[in-house]
Length: 261
Image (tube, rainbow, N blue to C red; front, side, top):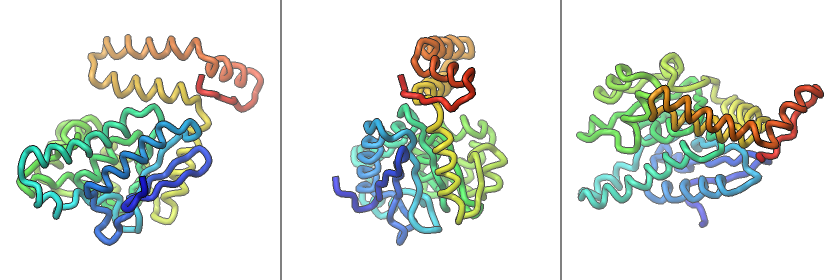
């Protein structure tokens, strides 16, 4: 696929998807969704890629929301459901793919933009970023996982307030409530994202996969069921080549050479 509204780059073990519609603050139209989904699947399938970073072009927005013009043109449940479904597929892929995903949030992350960011494994934001789910102001509600992922990240009460008022919060508040992991100046955003990504690439790919899976799956289970699921993944890792390499490297006081097996 030739991309028109995103840019896909590879840097050694990192892949980077840049939403590239700065003239409309990277509003997510249907073509951009399909392109981002194609690129994310490419990164997932590429054995050389260990971490996927998502960011936006320019210095104003990560994704400022859905393309309202396209939303206005589709009024039937069938039309809206079909296209909204593609956004949900993208968010679910970012959340569940075995490789860590990092949202490098360079400005507004609003509506579906925040939903995409929340689906990522980790989030780094610039200090001028703004966050919110303002769909209530359009007579609708979040429809791409926002009502489910936000309370899991920040708690029910804070999520209720953000979703029912539709108000935006700044980066400092997003960090305070646990919505983002780091806040950095704009000039340092991508360097911090790369540093975090490379810290992850130094770990066992298999251990990252199993740990991410245990957290995501366990959130939908009781505590006892979650612990049992964790133990299953732990047992798998204990029989892996990466575990043997990690222990040997520790004892030999050297850096491990993990192979994901």
